[in-house]
Length: 573
Image (cartoon, rainbow, N blue to C red; front, top):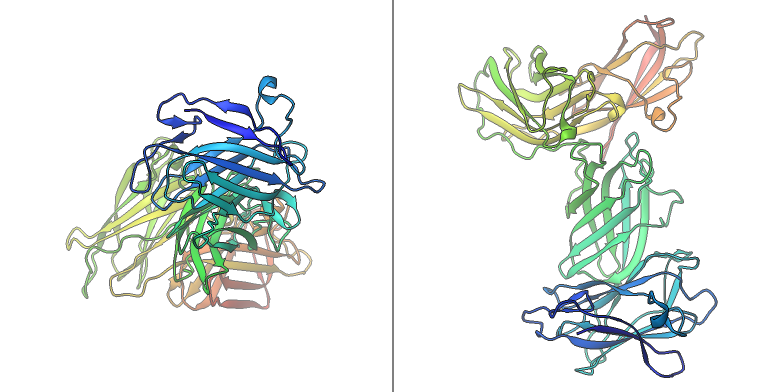
C-alpha cells in the first residue's frame, strides 16, 4: 500500500493528493515504514491524518526540507526520518506551491504500525534554503481507524538562528484527551573541555541521551548559553533544550564531526540537569576524541558515575594483579611485555625504552626495540626481561621513545609484568599514546602498578609554569628538562619541547627574558612535592639561562599548588 501525502489549505478547500510514494514491498509502507509484530503491534498498519500549522507572522515559513520521526511504546522500533518534502515534479506540484508557508495548514497521511499508543514525534529541519527558520503553530494527528486524536504542544521555533532557539530537531510528546500526557522536560547540559594543550575543537558536537524510558537525539549542541565561542580549552559550556523525558539517564553518547584543523577534542566530563529531577547526572570522560590519537575515536559512550574521577591520562588500568606478591623479597628479574594497538596508526618506527620503578629505586633503562628495521607492528607483542635488583616493590612502569623514524607516534593497549618464579602477574589494559603532538611534546608514559590492598594510584596532569628572569641575557635556546620530586617518587627527566602557549601561537619563543612558559607533565601521582630539578643540554649560542621561579599545580579536585623560588635567581650554565 502506498503512503499518500495530502495537503489542505488554511480556511478549508478541496483535499487533493499532491504526491505519492508507492511501496516496493508488500510489507513496507511509504518506502520507509515496515510493519512490525509484537505485543503492542498489529500486523496491519494504521493510517493517520497529520496536520501541521505554520505561524502567520512574517518570517514564520520555512524553505528547509522537513523530516519526521514517530515513536511508539517502549520496546517497539520507531519510524524515523519520514520525509515531508515538496514534490520534485511539476505535475505533482500543480498550483499548490511550497509546503509550510505563512499561515498554511499542511495535511498529510502517514501509515504507522498499529501501536497501542503513539508516545511522541520528532520534527527535524535540514536548515536548507534562504529562509530555513520555521515557527510551528499547531500540530495534531488523528487515527483514521480508531478515531484516536492526539495533539501536541507546539508554538515553537525550529531554527538555529533565533535568539531563544538553537535547535533543528524538536520532540513533541503526545497529548491524549483521556490519559496523562508524557512529560516535557528541560535538559540543561554542561560540557567541560579539558585544560590541556590543543584540547579545544571547532567540530560540530552531538549528544545522544539514553534513559530508562527511551533515547533522545542525537542533538547537535549549536549555541552555548554562556560563551560565544564554544568548546575552548578549559571552558565550561552550557546548553539547554526541551524534549520528551527519557526517564532516569543511564548513559550518553558524545561525538563530533572532526571539522577544521586540529579538530581533536579533549573532554573532561558532561553534567546534565533535568528540571523534574533534584539532582545532577555526572558522566566522566577524561579522554581525547581525536582521529589522530589512540584508537582514533570521535565518539564515546559515557556512563553514569557518582564520582568525578580526577584521572588525567589517555589510559586507565582495567585489571589488577592476578595474585598478590605478599611480604617477601622481590625478584631480581621480571618478564615484561607490551601490546601495540590493533590498527595501522598504532605502528611506530621510533626506538622504545622501558624503566621499572619501585619503592626503593629504579631499574636501568632497557632497550625494548624499534627503528626502521624493527618497528612495533599493529597487534604485535614485544617481550623483554628487566633486571630490577634492589628496587623493592614495583610501583610503576615508565615507557618512552626517541621520536625517530617516519612514523614515531605509538599507541599501545596492554602491559604485563610477570615474575617467573612466583607466578605473580600484573596485567593492565591501557589506552597509551606517546606522541610529540600531545602533552607539550613529552615522550614519556607512566602506568601505575596498583597492588591488592594498597591505595590505588592515579595518573595526574601537572601544570608547570617557569618564569625566566628579566636579567639581560637571561634567556636560553637550549633543550630544557625538568624533574618533579615528591614523597612517592619522581617523574624522571622530562624534556619541555612545546609550551602550552605554542599550541595557540606557534611563533611563541620559550624561555625568553621575562617570559612565563607553561607546560604539562603527566605522571603517576607523586604525593606532596618537595623539589623540582631543572637542567638543559648546554648547547647553542647563549645557552645560559636565568630562572626566577617555578610553579607546579596538580590538575585535579582539591588540587595543590607549589611554588619553588630560586635563591636570588639561579643561572643554569
